[in-house]
Amino acid sequence: MPPPGHILVVCTANICRSPMAAGLLQHALAAQPEPLRSLQVVSAGLAARAGERVSENSILALKKTGIDIAGHRSQPVTQALLDNALVVLCMTESHRQMIELQASPPPARLHLFREFMPQTGDKEIPDPYGGPLRVYEISRDEMVDAIPSLIAYLKTLVAAE
Image (cartoon, rainbow, N blue to C red; front, side):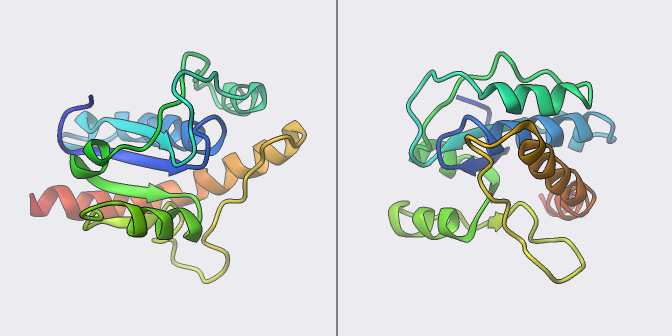
């Protein structure tokens, strides 16, 4: 179990999007001053089976940015993960709705990964599962685009804590 105050990134099976997003966000936080640098990012899936390997194309898409997620193993979302999260970041609106329906209580800070981006447009990150590497790279790039706005939001949270 991660320490209280972790960032939880959620997708469906925890083998494509959320491991990539968690790896990218953890990498970005490592370049920030404390206390952001010490925040732990974990990922989980709403329909995940524990212990599944991350998809090969997710590994390859992040390897191109110098981030290794090959050791990731899937885990299901639990109430404890939600309760102890500083913030929960979902890939799609349906993920957020599932958590709102199933969690008791739902997390106070439940957002989409791309929610804080300044421009209007699609805030969801589609599932690349089963697609070619290029589709995973598009997902990765959508996540990378969201990181600066996420870091800005996290700065406001840790300042308020």
